[in-house]
Amino acid sequence: MAGDRVRGLVELTRPVNAIAAGGLTFVGAFVAGGAFGAAGATGAAVGATVMATAGGNAINDFFDREIDRINAPDRPIPRGAIAARTALGFSLLLFAVAVGLALTLPLLAIVIAALNLVLLVSYTTVFKGLPGAGNAVVAYLGGSTFLFGGAAVGNLWTPAVLFVLAALATFAREIVKDVEDMTGDEAEGLRTLPIVVGRRRAVRLGLVLLLVAVITSPLPYIDGTFGLAYLLVLVPADILMVYAAYLSFHDATRGQTLLKYGMFLAAAAFVVGRVAVG
Picture 1 (cartoon, rainbow, N blue to C red):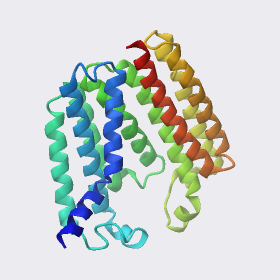
Picture 2 (cartoon, rainbow, N blue to C red):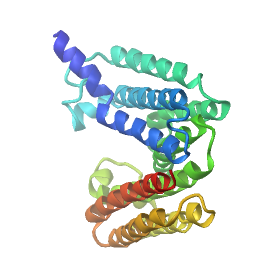
Picture 3 (spheres, rainbow, N blue to C red):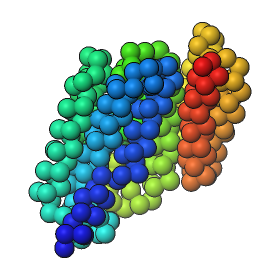
Picture 4 (cartoon, helix red, strand yellow):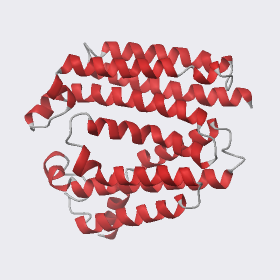
């Protein structure tokens, strides 16, 4: 039926995740100080992020369609709402719109967009099955939304700090999620980082990466970009993330949940810092 087909196309894009990614790109432009002064570029960057993320979600469903028949039979392709070929064509259309929007932006933003597009398309077939590599790609793509927003408005410094913080924190959270899923992943024959190197070693790596992010995070205060308001929100975020990583040694489920909250709070610190300086 036409209604189920339209609903299936929407589901392919994971609209909430796609819109959230666009929101992070806006945050990157905002903390760079150019979200409203360069509104056209900001809008194009946000739109490109939403379209590219939606396209990436759709093409992942295309590549994962056989696995989804077992693990997620309610997804649009396994349940028959969307043909695999239709999903592929739809993803390519979304990517084309994203490319068109990205080409209106400065050169550095175009380079970031091109790299992200390659990673989105190749994630499932190349990186997902490699221990640590899939985590790194997800971490980079998550953090790069901030970087892309800053590049779109011509200011990379502050968003670059946010990119490092978000990417390292995301990598740590991805490791903890893999620890949480070890039993099921081992049963399916997957080679995630905790399975290959062991649970405790993997969590230690996540903790080290998170400590690097925490050490980096005060730079906008130290260099005078943001004032005390930024630091007052950032410090609790850093404490929460480090505690979450430590907790993951004993309770991976609660650890990764708290880590996610800490990441949101850290992003809020950058927004508060920018609002405080005007």
